[in-house]
Amino acid sequence: MKTKTILAVDDVELNLEILHSLLDDYNVIKTTCGFTALKIVDEKQIDLIILDIMMPDIDGFEVCQELKQNPRTKKIPILFITANTDEDSIEKAYEIGGNDYITKPFKTKELLARVAMQIDLVDKTENLENLISTQVEQIRSKDSLLIEQSKKAEMGQMIATIAHQLKQPLNVINAIVSGAQLTLMLGDEVDMDEMSNKVQEEVKFMSETIDMYRTFFSSSKEKKLASLEKTIETTLDIIGANTLSVHLVKDYKNDLGFIKIYSNEIIQCVMNLIKNAQDHLNEMKIKKKVIKISTDENKKYQIITVHDNGGGVPEEIQEKIFENYFTTKCEDKGTGIGLHLVKQIIEDKHNGKVYVKNEILEYEDISEMGAKFVIKLRKSD
Image 1 (tube, helix red, strand yellow):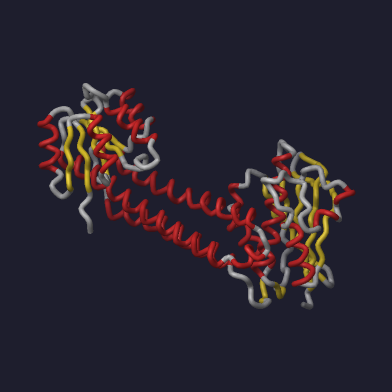
Image 2: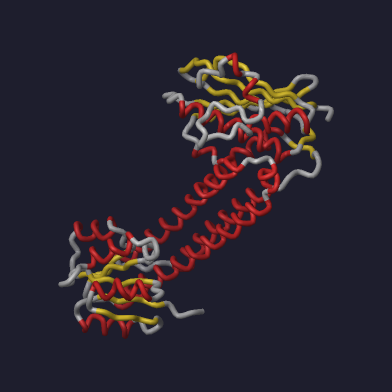
């Protein structure tokens, strides 16, 4: 493994010599000048910067701000080193992008632990970013179904959803590391094995999430028996239902039997209806946004409904909204392909029915008109 390079910046030569001797497992570059530090970072690959706050020419805060404003250097972790322990200095260090701090005089174990933690976090972050990049590229390259249907806008929205969902485990990892840093600051020992196991659990979750998206983007080859309830729950997992900023109400009929469907295509339809409802509720600036998802059945059909409280669809366009390229959204927010594709999937591939009607939605203290999209899937097919 390549030796990591640390840039140590301190206007006191003795401090630099101490750092150099303590960090003998790393390639340490030393400088007493903040301006020189900026030049070194611009010319060399630096993995971590140990930065003194109090310097005569340009202080550590200014150096940090310069680095964080540069897209090429903003990700380099910065470990502030200072004799100041007042809360204002510490708060400012974090506000401008510092990752951690350590006080003079140096405590060997604490210094080494904090440096190792930042280096380890950099490696894990790079690995996660590479994993995400690779998997997303695979999704894009294999996504022939959406590309063939000219659904570039929907694809972009999906990638944004993936990125949003992956932020949560990354935040958990950051919290784990921050907790360990606090433990060290309080003078206690950190169980590195336990911390590593927790980080690995989050990485596993991210990998499983990406696999779920990859499965979704693969086109179904044949109809298979499936549960509509499970299919809807999979849809909600994919879009991250807890991030929708709406009251999501689920009303599933008990003992609804299995039905032969193209599961991924039904997921795509339900996803489209939910996202359309969310967009409409946001556009209408509804105070209490509600989306109700239900399942039911009759002798011929199993039924999925997606019902919102956004005021409904004007009667004059209720039939048009399923036409190709018809959209009520701004050009940059919709292609008009989504509902037409839903119609094709339900009516052509499943021999079913899809339509919309306006109906009052009852939920808690509200009773408001909304659009109710109905999908009917034949039991016999």
